[in-house]
View (cartoon, rainbow, N blue to C red):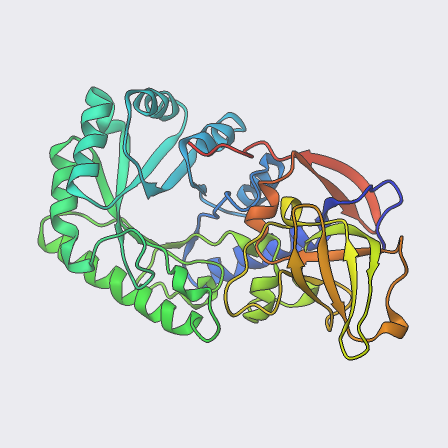
Length: 365
């Protein structure tokens, strides 16, 4: 795909045909496995994309914050899961109460203190909010051990909240060789915690799991739904993990070569593009081969970032693109890139057809 002439660099471009294909494919695959789909909208933060996901069969959306939930509720999404433990201030409590009047709201909890605080803050409105107890299935961020879910659920019930089940985020799947193992650990944790909750007298109606690397590996013997996010776009991390192909990449950053780096006689050819950490994001896991990839040049590597520029190592000086040449960059982590811009270019067949506002950008609380 060529970069449309109207695009001024740097700019995020979304190929809407690939986007729609990714959305349909995940929805169909998840449905065929007997699972529900609740995509994580923190990846895109765009109501137009959320509408496409719901139209393809998603039961609702996953979000990271109350602010994101407010944006998507205002756009008409009526089933939202805030997939993190919250500590409820009076301000947050009022916002949750307001949200629960127009949408079904579920919140993650992973401690007796957090569940008690949530119910206390909501007061008489606590019964309008459901909770899922978060499990640590190996990522070791938030979440309780599956054997420890009952006290958290009991605290939530005492606080007047509706306990719907359990969830986990297998975030350790974002590493080479880990998706299959992480998916197995996820299923074990969901099954174990469900049995513990049932023994404590709770009806478990929801067992939620699945990141983009594991969504296609999650079985319905453990989960009832999955929550992938990055699948809509793909990114350089998913590419290196072999969880997507180059043809699945829907989001790229249009960049321009602005400088040629002096090349030492025994060193690689280098040039500079006008897309740095303030549009690509700076996320680079230890195993990643660079700070991003070039869409049409798989052997090139982005080896350094500054705020507004990136250094590209090129396979050979004789073929290095000229200053002024435009390239498409695949960010390492699209969730960061989307949160760095106000709007994105929508491309179809190489033509600029629209611009979408990143409406949930910066909604961090």
